[in-house]
Image (cartoon, rainbow, N blue to C red; front, side):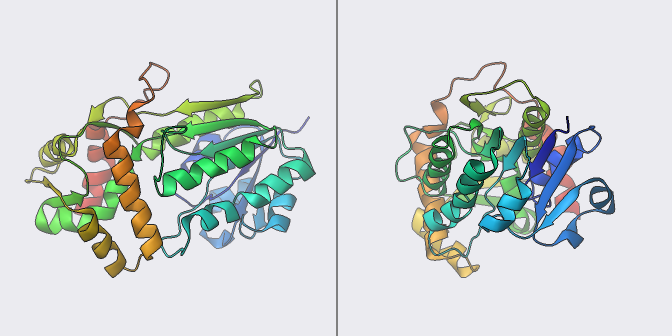
Length: 295
């Protein structure tokens, strides 16, 4: 029997790395791609491509026909005027297609803090995604992450030019942080596993909790130049984001996420050997950040 895996955002930060993990498998792979030309030749030769965007119910229904496992990632839209509307516009077509096509398993990219996070911006919206998917009764694994190490790439310019990075959180507040490569590895393992069912959260916590001041020290050592963290007010950070083209709603969501992290929503999940993913912040700096800074 053919086992069909569907990947959304196949050129995105997570979807692209998931494909790297599963391309050599013997399973049938289908992707939803708005612009198939952005897929590598290797991917285009190996997978079935459904052209379109996964906020279109007809595109999603076509892509999920006969699907066994689906990776569902809601792409960010920093220009969105409503975070909730943006997220749900990408979940309602999945909801319809699950009921229409009889999908067996879905893996979603979510966040830590479900059940305790209130007014947490994009995090609160993504929990609405979890709720809607689970309401279908489909077997579901919600990948629950803290902040991504890879988000530090948004601050490449101030790191390079000023030796600084900024965020509206205390420099001494320790939180877990994980790399997108570990999220992708976890998702790929679940996609290839035919044995699981039911609905569960799957935390991906990285190997350690770090503060921004500790990250700055590690970055300084890896980059061999001084880097320091500067806490800024939420109002100033939001103003800077809006000046760079972000909608006020999306920028406010980021401020609300930072405030929720400061309140401790990422601390609710106890660290276990199963939830501790392998890539350390130092390794990520050496293999991802340093080449980006030197580029």
